[in-house]
Length: 167
Image (tube, rainbow, N blue to C red; front, side, top):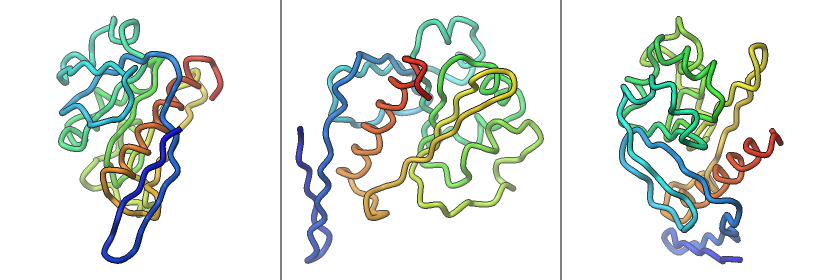
């Protein structure tokens, strides 16, 4: 178990955040790989065209779409991928939820910010009729390295749950 602490002005913010200790995960990343605490996570950088490859779903446990690529990956052609894939997609630092990624007729820039306070959203298409989504908030709604790493830990736990069919 890890114990993380962060300071904000004179106020101490403490987050008891255990590390992810589950199975090894291989995650494709569109963008820059995030900084994490866990050792059993393998990141592989891919590009936008790689998202369209059939074997993507056989190779990875999940796909992270980083902030700088959110708009480009919210196009209609990618929505079909997200809603037919057999792995979770995680949209990092989106302020617009998962909806503009999975709805083909939704424009990312025009879609309103949801102001939920979530740092990331995950989406997984369970079957043709059903999709699941998750929001990952920051401790005390504070963006700092400690809280961001905690979000990634919770995301890894969700990915493992999906691997086990527990979603």
